Length: 274
Image (tube, rainbow, N blue to C red; front, side):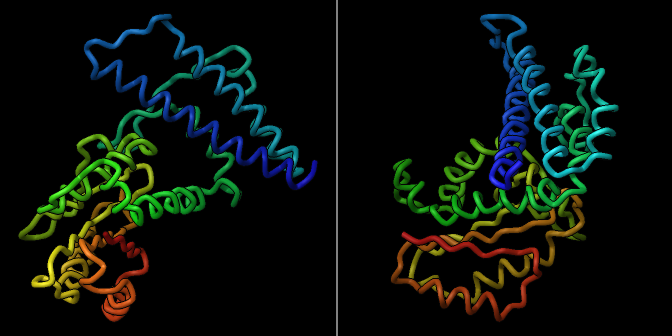
């Protein structure tokens, strides 16, 4: 099998996994929280999920074969062949953290076999997905214009539309998630939480020349970086700075100030301006 064919299988596994997780989450949410939810064809979604899980199973076998991972191929096949053939426990659910939503157990079990390989490591999957998040945040101004958000006075007017967009890709963002960044005298609450990526986002809206003290804003974020600790569900942090006008300062000035503050390595700066 050629390198291009192998890369195609890898991408197909990732997309199929994402599709299954998204569809299961939507189905589960509708069943548990939507009083008016019904399926025109009862059982269709569950049959679709089973079909896709089988598809994912054979894709993973193809990956092991393409990589000549014979032992992994045999171990994976031995563990799941009967379940796939007889559709046993394919839709079993599990909760992997007390404050998270239910997930498909078999997907987690599949990835126990894939995670040791760099192509599918949890770290790499999160890094790839974060690139998409970075792109969305850097286009904050474009999103606000498209959604016709004007006369912005408060930061939530900036980050709520962005949060909605991110929620299209990562459904758990739509929930009223809370983090446990609790210090002695204060509870710290990030503006956007992405549980799927273990990521918290803090927005800063710089809106007038009078308030254009860049160091003050960066110092506020630096304080957040000190206090956003203690919740093992989140270990990636993004500071999204949105400038009302390019005349207030330049991205280079903000970046220089950021660099001078010695932020932790797991903090990333994203700048967008009007």
